[in-house]
Every structure is written in C-alpha cells, then in structure tokens.
Image 1 (spheres, one colour):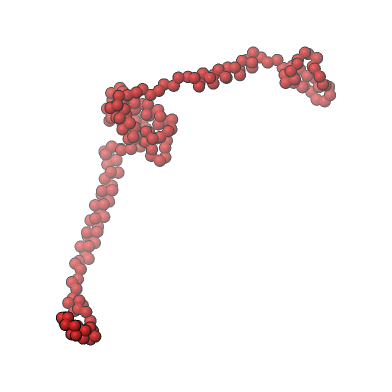
Image 2: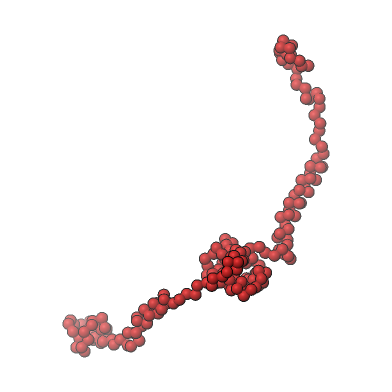
Length: 192
C-alpha cells in the first residue's frame, strides 16, 4: 500500500498499521486535545520554574550576621562524613539548617537555645563542640586521665629502678699508656 490513505489523512506519522502482510488495514490515530496541549503545558511549566523568584536570604545587620555565621561554624552537617560544618557544606539539609539559624537569630533566640534546638532535632552529634556534661565529660576528660596515668606509671617505674650508680674513680681514669706518658713528659704537659 503506497500513496495516500483513503480516509483522508495526509500525515503518515498519524497512521497505524493493523494486521500483517499486504492486506493490512491502516487507521488514523486522532490526537486528543490533551496530547496536543501536553507539550505546551510542559514548556510553560519549565519557563515558570526558571522564572520563579527565589527568596534570597534576608540581609541581617552585621552583628547578627557574624553571630549567625559563628553558630553555623559550630554545627556539623548531619550528612557529611567528613565532619564539615553547615557553613562549609553544600548539602540541601545544611542549606536549610543555615536558613533556620538565620531565622532564629532574627527571632532573638540565644546561642544556647539555638544549639539546644538542633541537638534535640539531630542529637549531640550535630554539635562540633559538644557540652561538657554527663557522658561527654568522659570524652573531654579521658585524654587528661590517660596523660596523668602515663605520667604516674613513668614516675613509678623510674623510682623503682633506683638512682643511677655513681661512676668509680678507677673506671674514670684512662688506661696507662707509656707512649702518652713519654709525650707528656717531653712537652712539659702535666698530667699524672
């Protein structure tokens, strides 16, 4: 079957072959209204998304901005394995946490309230400088305890060993060398 189809369709891409062989019947697929509007709708959505205004972060006074940055540097990114602060991290959760810090600074919350907010939500892991209370006190004190214990063990070991023996006068004297003795006498150098 070549040429035009008898039902009047002029675009061969809108035709479907049904059946097999030479006697296959062709029927026209009529595009629905939805299929005609779908590409246009997708284009409009993509343009709308690209043109949508993004809310820039509110500008804070310099003192509040410095405070917000200092707090952000003391909060760990929950997703980063390297222990990055949220101020350095580019993950989505860090961006949201930075926005939350800025909002809380604007609301007038204290630093400890902001740290408590995040530690309740993410655990003490999120704090780069965890509080020195409870179990964390052991983490802070363990290095000092180990250093003190090592010093005490070294002192006990050195004390048990006792004082170093004093060198004997006989061991200090150099062995008798007749040639050296002769040179000393000839040169007038004193000596034993």
